[in-house]
Image (cartoon, rainbow, N blue to C red; front, side, top):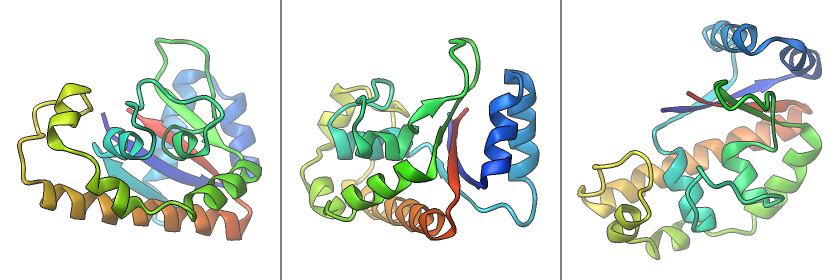
Length: 166
């Protein structure tokens, strides 16, 4: 499973909200492939970033916690458990999330995470936590900073963010 974050205006968000589950997934795939699409692809690092921020796997989002919502979104489009995981963050929540994240020193939090804790907590993706921690830390810090900059762009543009973990 990979996580992708797509910036959308209010009209596109409304279109996604009104679409069926299947149509929404197809529309997101089409939007993501457009050259003008503003998106960040975290690949498989979404769960570990969530763990570094919250000490919980993203499979157990922390309700009403901006650092958790940063990774998994605020509200899902569908209550259907068989549907793809697609959530969104309205602009008003982006303001709060960015305010909280700007107070966090992600690098210091990374220093407190051990490879053993990632294995013990079964953080996705499994079976990769044998790599050198310093290599992983560099990649995670770069991905976190890229996503935070993306959130700041959405904040400046007055846009919303759609999170898909497929």
